Image: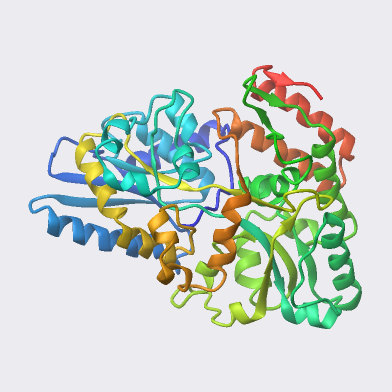
Length: 460
């Protein structure tokens, strides 16, 4: 599936935690077991029954792998759950050799938590003997590298983010079909123009609040925050001191942008914006039906509109335009993107780790990787695929989003990050509902940050 990190692992009520634990154990009740000829592969299955991209891809790899390895069997263990529940179920499964699969799909923003907990196996010994590893771009390789310097996952693609806009709505509003804002103010001004001249649509979507989870943090807030300052330092984490950074002026400016969107009613109504299904609402309803002017979102959206997706929209490439998200004042480098990704990791308690890595190698041949990137509307992390004209021509917009990799940023995905992300979502929600001023939300964030980072914070 595409990189849609929509929530972080949170402290669940005891009863729900028990239910999730039971569900996780049921999903993989026999675990890896002791059968050396059976490989168990656990992955996140879409909660949208119409989206079967991952299921179909893995079914094809299973068939190929079993043919190339006579006597070996692959058992696919799908976990059908929203992201936050998926993370919880996976963590429960990884705790015991009775329930741990041989191979598991891990989100890069949470992988360090599982690494720190000792749930995953370092892959360096395997990678050193795998020639294809040299084809992976360096930034993607670091996505699954822990503070101990070891690599714990093989990335299967990345993503970037930008501004999607409806050309028909722009035409009605008198805005250019080649729109490319240079500053935040130009984004807001376009939204205000749409509100005035096309009043029956939502001018601008910026994901916000805890219900949207990591989508609010990454597609929303961080796309703003990383566009403040001069772009040379990470505004969330200081690598030199290994400390998290309290909310300074850039943090407050990003909150002010969010506050403006919802205070001026430029975004979805607050109830819709805080609906846990907001991403489905945007991709499956507002955009295809011409009800949204501008959407700050990810490169993977076309996956939902392809044939067989359940939300087919073959005209999307004619109806929608693309623009990069500008920096706050147009300062260098002029554009902003965030990137994440998912990786295939081997649990430390896996019964068949060697077989699991063999399966990774089958999945990640050039041909299979290219097939996955295209089917998943993902961005290539293999250099040989990115340079292949067949990849560039496979889907409208793929070159636009691939080019953004050069100016993208990656989250400081250290163990404290999920808690930091939740604190950001709470601050966003406070200014979205109007329950907090920007100053109050920033102060609340700073207090939460101290707890999340065990006091290792640089004050602003």
